[in-house]
Image (cartoon, rainbow, N blue to C red):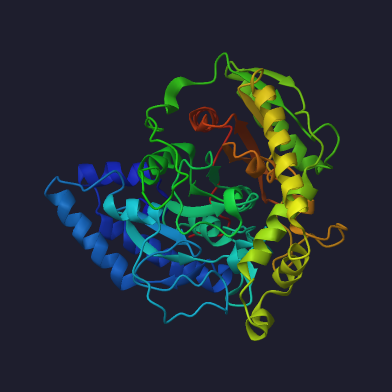
Length: 467
């Protein structure tokens, strides 16, 4: 029998169309996976099985009438608990949020999914207000990695990554302010895309400003393209959204032959990458070259922009808690409390200097992409480490940005960047390859990733021990 919880969204939709199974069957399979995995993984803060099954029944009726509502009618999805979803609280991993407030509005991406008939399983875990690259919070505890629940799922979209990896629906919405889609996607062995800023409308705006993107977390690049075609729809509430573009799904099949690709293994020696991570990434790069891309080793022309990122990120944290009283501040994650206090000490000139550094970085990457269509790097220099820790034990890093040097630069530049699973390390944990393109070339990132999946160089591996 087919394990419906292991299928992609496109496979589910094909099965619905042929009458092989229904959205109710798929939703029950996803709920069964949640029941089996949640005691170990802790990927969800709220699951509404009754609502999900009711939505699935309505979708099944539309499919019986051969009148599906939209592109993902009947597909089980989950939503990171930073994004509004009407009918229940969006607690953002924080004990400072009042659950009994009025929760009657969808975020733009959630609204588009609802219009296209998606089945909402529930809300996924996040660190408090999405502030760090792992997923644990005073509200919901730590989220484990489905490959080894004693290790972190990454963050800040760790719940979404874990849910997709263990079979709780093939689609999830994440957010990415410094790697928060790509980090957990890499750790959990799934696909994650940070689109060009503004491609997916966001409301309310993030306290971290224009660093924050909404993006798809899926089993493969084709599902991500499908999800992008849904959530990129316009929404007047986001004044910074981009004009609607063409279909991402339609752009998948161009292949990579003739593309000019730069491979930077360590940003010119600036990053120490674990040998087994480097080996898996290098093998995937060679496969891309074998598909006809012109690949050469080349490093982008910039030094680590972490200080500029910290200034912007910590300032956002300070703004977030600016009006909190002493009691609310006591409830915060100690790390968030620490960075917000540091952010409050920056001056306007400090902030504008960081903006200048950001603009210079964007200019440098614009020049780089005048030569190269894509930049390939490891997504992360390490694989998943112990859950409940902000940094790997013994690493010497102080903050999560110490072990994510390949991700946050491209939030500063607002470029599209994705991670594809390209193998496992010696301990059986997933390794990710990052693909980066110039702003507005999300289609190139998805096209190259799709080619890697087609060639078997990017593979969603079943979670060990899965029934």
